[in-house]
Length: 436
Ligand SMILES: [Zn+2]
Image (tube, rainbow, N blue to C red):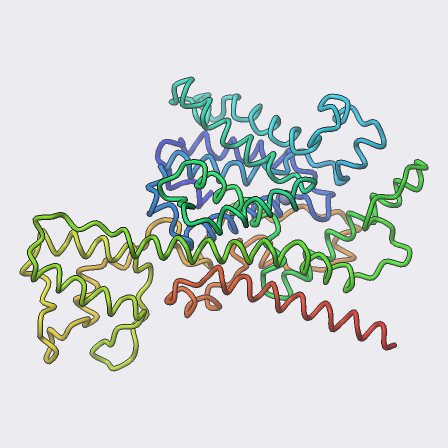
C-alpha cells in the first residue's frame, strides 16, 4: 500500500479494496508462492528500479510505475503451489485452457486483469477507471508482458539475448523503447529471483519454503503416478547442492547483467545531463566543479565527517536548474573557508532537498502493507518465524547494508555480491556434507 499510495490517481478507498481482493487470491497454504512472495517481489522491484535510476533518466511516467508494481503484486496470483509441468502432466484445466504454453503465467496475468476490471470501495470504482480505453490497453499489455516474462522455460535464451544486447554500443534504455522494455523486464524477472541475493537468513528461509513446495508437488506426482518433476523428489535431495547450482547457473548470471545495466545507466546519466546554451561559462564551470566532487561520492561538511551524497544524477539535474535560476544562492566559486565553504551541509540541504525521488526511498522504509501470510499449522510448526522480518517488512535487502554502495551508485553490483556470497555458503555446506 505504501508503495502505491503515492499515486494520487489510484483512489485510496478503491486501492485497499483491490489489494484485499488480490491478496485473497493467493493461497495462504503455499509455503513459497504466497502473498508474502508477491509483496517481497514488489519491494525488490521498487528497490532495484530506484537504484538503477532508470525512472528519472527515462522519465518513466507514474502510471507506468504503478502498472509495473501492480504486475509484481499479481505476478503469481492464484498459484496452485505446483509448477507448469505438473499442470501439463496432470492435464489440469489450466493447461488445457492455455494449450500447455506458459500455463501459470497466463493464469496469473488473466486473474490480475480480471481483478482490475472490477469495481471496489464504497464508490464502486475501478482502480484504473479514469483511464481511456486506449491507455488502459497499453498498461494492460505492459502488465501481461511482464508477468508472461517470468516463465522460466525461456530463461536461458532470453538472458543470452539480454547479455548480447547489453554488450552492443547502441543499447540505450533511456532513449530506445525496446531496450527500455528489455531492461524493465529483466528488473522484473530478477526481482522474482531476488531472495537469492538477500542476506543469508532471509535467503535461507525462502529456500526452505520453495523446497517444501517442490517436495509437496513431488509427493503428489508420485501419488498420481506422474513423472516426478526436476527438484521435486525429496528422496536423495541435497538442499545445499541444489541451491548452489541454482544460484550459480540461474541467479548469478542474471544479477551480473543487472549490475551491468546499473553501470550503464549511471554512465548515461553522467553523459546526458543537459545544460542549456544560455548557461554562462562561469556557472557551467561552477556546476562542473561541484558535480566533479559529487561524482567523487563524498563531500566534506563542516564537522569534518564525510557526508554521503545520495542519488547524484538527480542532484546534478537539480543543481543545474538551481544554478540557472538562483545564481547568487549558490556560492561555489572559490569560497573554501568559513560558513560558506563549498559543500557545507546547510547549503547542500538548501540546494539538494534531502527528499529523494519515490523509488530511492531507503529500503527499510518500503512497505506494501500486506499483512503477514496466514500460515497453515504445518507451516508454522516447520518454519517458526524464520525470515518474517524480511518477508513482510519488505525491503529485505537491508537499508544499512547498501549505504556505501548507494554513494558509489553500485547498489545492484552489491546485490550481485550478496548473491555470490550466498552461493559460496551453499557450496561450503555441500562440501561439508560430502566430507561427512
Ligand atoms: Zn514469483
